[in-house]
Image 1 (spheres, rainbow, N blue to C red):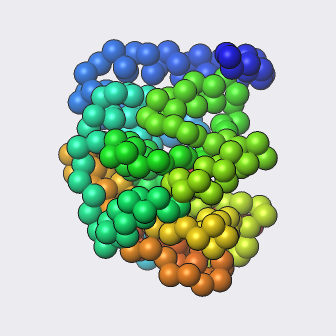
Image 2 (cartoon, rainbow, N blue to C red; image 1 turned 90 degrees about the vertical axis):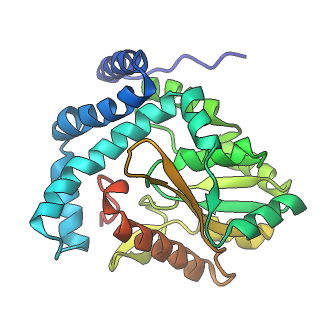
Length: 291
C-alpha cells in the first residue's frame, strides 16, 4: 500500500525541491567526497541563512560561558558541518550501512547489551543528537539486534516523506511519535524488542531537569518505559572520528533503576559528559533551554 501524498504549503514544497536537488547532486559523488562537501554546504550556506550561528553562540553563552572565543568560532563552523555530514550519510543508504556495520562495539555496557539480546529481554538505547546517531542503529541491526527507532516527524511534510524512507532504509521498524506509533512501539518493546530513543530534545510536557547546569524540560518516557517493561536503559553513542567519515560505537553501562526523574537526570549527565569531550558533535542549534 503506497503512502499518501504529502500536502503542505507552496514554500514548503519549494524548500523540499531545493533540498532534493542538492541531495541528488551530492549523491552522484563518491562517498568520501560527498560527506565533507555536504558538511561544507550546510556550514557555509544553510547555517547562516537559518540563523544557526547566533543560536549556537546563545546556547554556548548560557551553558559554557567560559569557553574561549576561538573555540566558539570553531564550534559555529563545526556544528553545522556535522549536521550536514549526518544528513547525507543517512541518505547514502547502503554505503553508510556498509561502513557502520563493520564498527566494533566498545564500552562498559557491551556485555549487558549482549546478555539482554541473548535472553530476548527488552532494551531501550538512549542516545542523543550527537555524532551520527543512526550509525548506532545500523551497527546493531547488522548484528541481528531487533532495534526499532522512535522519530519525530519533520515540520515540512514533503521533506518528511523522503526522510522517513531514508531512515527506514537503514533499518526497521521505525515508529512515528504519536498515538499510533507509540502503540506499535510498545508492542515491539513488550515482545522483547530494542528501542532507540533520543531524549535530548525540549519537550513541553517534560519535567525540569538539569543539563549543563541549566533547567531543561526533559521527557521521562525512556525511564518510564524501562521501569514498566523491565527493560535495560543503556546510553549508546556514535562518536565521529577525526577523519570525519568513521565512528566509534560506545555502549555505556546501564542506568541503575531508580525514580524516572533520577534515571533521566543520569541520562542527561551521561550525555553532557560526552558532549564536554566532543562539543562540536552535538546539535547546539536545538532550542534545548527555551523557557
